[in-house]
Image (cartoon, rainbow, N blue to C red):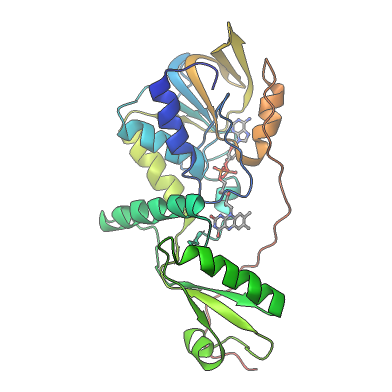
Length: 282
Ligand SMILES: Cc1cc2nc3c(=O)[nH]c(=O)nc-3n(C[C@H](O)[C@H](O)[C@H](O)COP(=O)(O)OP(=O)(O)OC[C@H]3O[C@@H](n4cnc5c(N)ncnc54)[C@H](O)[C@@H]3O)c2cc1C
């Protein structure tokens, strides 16, 4: 973020941490960006206090929290549709078995999503717990080390083996499993639904969403952001938040002056499974 009050900077630093997954740190503190997901297409304003690029889980969370904190002159610019980036593919695991700073973010997200669920929003949240498996002795030692710092800092988790493990997950083949860590408070949600709900709530608070529009460059004058160039035209603004996830580095390099964002996409595999209709045969 190149231009901004201390208040806005503090606010943003709190918001940036709300991304579901932080393997790749895309939020840039000197030139921030964000995004959302749903079917909203306002016409492009020529001026706004805050422009957010992207509309994934991070951008929607930033827009939602800004609105919650009294900011409403916000434009979210998304090159595709709200939530159509990596947030669309996330499995939505909210895993607490992590170092404390990361875990606090997940706690916050679980609490927020529980509130949304209680308000009647369909986010398909299930606090089903998770099992971290070890197939080798080395992996089990690594898991025990993680337990050793997680338990004293407030996370309930336990080591499980054999029949106990099988009871937790009846379809698991435990023949080659050395042991596992059970984290009962872990949860799953539908990340696309979260994107849509946060985008809707942000819009209700005044944020505008413009889909199918790409941010091309961010220009600064006297070390302050003053205009964001997009396919559909320019937006003069005070603050720019880069929430373009794995595209954040590219956008930073296209800006003037260039901003180097240490984000690099990594390959990720996933499989879609259907519901189980009968027990698995070993
Ligand atoms: C298969 C898979 C499984 C995952 N499982 C989990 C999990 O279980 N738990 C977990 O916490 N995380 C998980 N993740 C990671 C998680 O999904 C991501 O970390 C998270 O969704 C990133 O959100 P984001 O808002 O930063 O990025 P995105 O959702 O990618 O949003 C960025 C948006 O920016 C837009 N954009 C890019 N460039 C521009 C531009 N120049 N102008 C305008 N818009 C632009 C894109 O179109 C995109 O919509 C998983 C990821 C994958 C791929």
